[in-house]
Image (cartoon, rainbow, N blue to C red):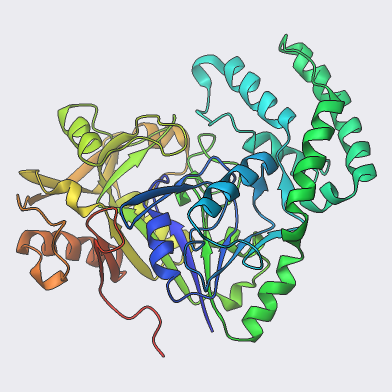
Length: 429
């Protein structure tokens, strides 16, 4: 048995999709455990680009079973559209894709609430994707949510939606928004339910059988640790738990089964949306990172904020997740820089600290203190062996590993499957 959690160790967009795709080559199950269609996992292989929002990144490996866990919030219409796109590639979904009956449903009223609520915040807006993720999780916690299993019983679905819509239309009226119609939503959801019915099941028991059968399981997170609702840069966070703890609650797999906690970090740092970002480069270097890394959101197309790698924040992610494997992605983006930097501490109110401040006010005051390294000024995309990397490149990677006390297991130098160095056997017999 091998259970590995793949976690974004920054603010998301670290390249988790590619890494999960690579791990899926030998995995029996890939489980998405939180988030919704606000995530975009981009895969490049055989000259094609594929962006997944809800379906786990292992779907393009025929022998891999893919599970959408109970911690995910599912937009049924978006999911069906994504399933159609995956089928067009020739990938089979029947008897390979499983959707938890207790995963919560994103309904049209969640999207409407998300959009009008974000607009009302004005300058204080969070920077959500407007896809209804937050309001769906609010309803989940308020115990008025609708779950995937509810879609399969039209009477139950109608009753729950009627109750919710009364309160929701009152809220929409306060925003001067048009009320929503139950009939149209019911028709849309019942159509979606019939198409999804064969895929909805009790996935926790499915995964416990896989554990008993000693199968290889990969738990795939969305977003990143610094966007965690509890441990992230609140309130500029997502509405779920992308951390290792969230992998257990979002899948039903117990903590005692987790063996490998793999943290994914870019060789630099990015952030989408609002919120503090100590190493952000609002200058030509930041623009150089953005252009070289094609740093535009795969879900929204928004330009990402860019900066040097932040080892204070990364060390925090290592600690709260128990990360024992490190992946560095987009190393090639640094190829053209004369000097590369890594933030090793902060100065806050004139005092030095290497402790990541979870208080928003203190983090906003954090000034990064950098360690500088000579750039390598050599293209790394065609290099397939760690030993062949330029000396300055290896020293940069080894500094990161030593500073964090975590071994680097994978180095990615491009978006393609083959542009990857796996430094040790991830599935030893």
